[in-house]
Image (tube, rainbow, N blue to C red; front, side, top):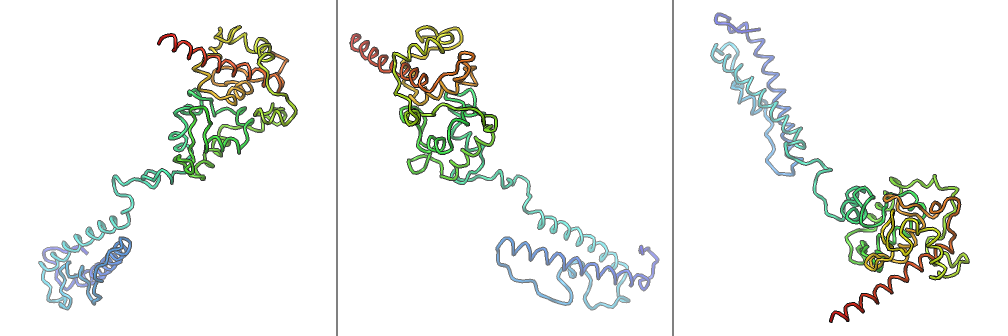
Length: 327
């Protein structure tokens, strides 16, 4: 009922009575919200006194024991005005209390800073520790691509994990495990290994492929003889010269594979891996496609790797001789 200039006070007592009950309801609601906020923020404040009329009811300027007949028109007007202010205040406080976790500028749990040892997201771990050498998406980096299903099918989980944890001796691949001074925990290394294989590996495509032995030790265990550089020179001319040149110094489709600087940065195992799986990001074929219909045998792979590695020592000796002559 809306109050007018000539509306008798007695006719508004019913409306005042219900509004007073509404005010008490909202005041109790606000007290509950404040108590929840205090409890949540772990601050200690004195508890609100329990009285017949709450403090917010006093704010709304209604005398607790005033007779409704004694209220004048100005009293009623002040009550209605203050009642609206009380409701607005309650709504604001309630909104702040319930929405305190979504304040402007507050980061989400995913955006909050975490110590390096607590990062469990594969993308972040790879970007921080691997992308600088192996490429942002596992391709076209200075080192071998990891985003290569054939490579991931050839290398076992244990071998891949060992290379990440302990590095590769004789190359620029560092050891990343905390036990040897690196930044990664065992759990983070497992996340990297599992992420590479689940995102980039397609083992089901190679179920019927007979892979050559991954390492020279595996080849020897299966009966292959050690590599021979003389036999390797013949193998090179058959499978590699059409791309890298007759003497290995570079050709129409590939660069030099006997450059001393290149060989100083790559291990014998890395040479063997490259001969087996190629470089998918650079268009280099694997051991099956160098010569159509004539895949390389495990012995031929060992021989050509030995021929390539022999140029490393020859290159180092030549550089040492040149340095002595300059002096």
